[in-house]
Length: 198
Length: 317
Ligand SMILES: Nc1ncnc2c1ncn2[C@@H]1O[C@H](COP(=O)(O)OP(=O)(O)OP(=O)(O)O)[C@@H](O)[C@H]1O
Ligand SMILES: [Mg+2]
Image (cartoon, rainbow over all chains, first blue to last red; front, side, top):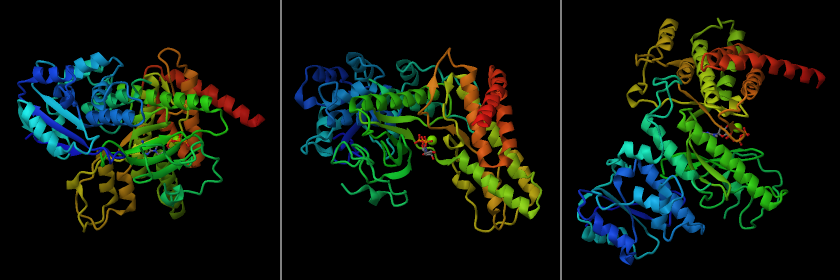
């Protein structure tokens, strides 16, 4: 059994989301092949965990996907593909899969499953992922911080075209408080994906 | 859905709201996914309704700015205008965040439905800070006390931060468009739990307070009570956050000194409207602004013209 973190996003209480995190994954190519062949028992968003800078980034993509789904404005086939699409800064679906989805060489994995059907429970997801993912399940704590533990900051910066630390030439506390660089980076990413497609 | 009155007990009753477009949803309630639960009304302006709620996680407070449909406008035009304004505001905010200007981050948006979710800024508006300060100035005047105090020093520091924040905004090519003191916030510094005030403390002497204010630190030494004034001196610390970019514009080449000067002029009027005693404070804002970026002095020069025109207009008025 994989360790599963189940949450609901505020304002969407009837749509639980199940998340699992893995390290030392050995069968990424196999998992990716299931997605490519649209195997119905593999209706997941499978992300390479190195592209996730923060829990909020993941949650915003989930919120956007859910909202698009519920308001009939999805750009892709399923809420899960929509989530991967929403993570990406531009409207190229294929590119969003290449950047954020698992690739054959991925060794870390974030698996996300929307509970859009009462049959899908944390238990059923835990069992299935435990069977199909060859890797080490990582527990996710209440703040979701672990989801960002494999973040490749340089890679993420490149995807979002962020130059190191913004243009803030002033390093120190010019305005009463030193700006937290990573927090600022997160904030730009959230704003960018929230406005995508506008 | 419960009537909106039940969720906004403190807000002034709306005067005969125009008929809603969707009969299922009164005009002054938010579209999905927002419901009346976990929603607190902050302001109901002419253009936007502002609420406090949470977003993404139960402990991420946020502001929802909702631009309701205007029943007197043609629906297609209305939707187009709402979308354009909302996106203009959101894009400028993201631009500011990218370039290191302190603004609330954009957390979410649905421009078809007319809502924008922004990061919550814990603190109060500069307008509130100034009102509190003006009240104390009047109070002290009555008591015949020396007006130059630690409070004033902290206040000057705050003004410098305002000047630099506006300077930074102008430097990256953004003009705010509605730069009043209500659209500047002082973000409260997060309290470190170790600095929790113990129950019994000795009274602080004035010189001790001055030393602390100068150092910008408030050591945890015993006093019966730090007193109202001390608490307020402490709360003048913090970062200045610019909010409300509904009328802002961004341009890399065309931002004219005129636009920047008008921003400053609007802010100057807002200061003057607070209290006559606030005018010297604004000098400090301008001083810091002038030193904050390369073209700032030219803007200050231009401000003199804008002032002259403003005065003439009010004389003709
Ligand atoms: N991000 C935020 N964090 C905390 N409080 C906020 C935030 N944004 C707005 N507020 C509060 O809500 C008030 C109104 O917000 P804002 O100025 O953005 O809306 P508005 O309707 O355009 O206002 P105005 O009447 O000035 O045009 C602010 O003065 C402030 O007190
Ligand atoms: Mg305002």
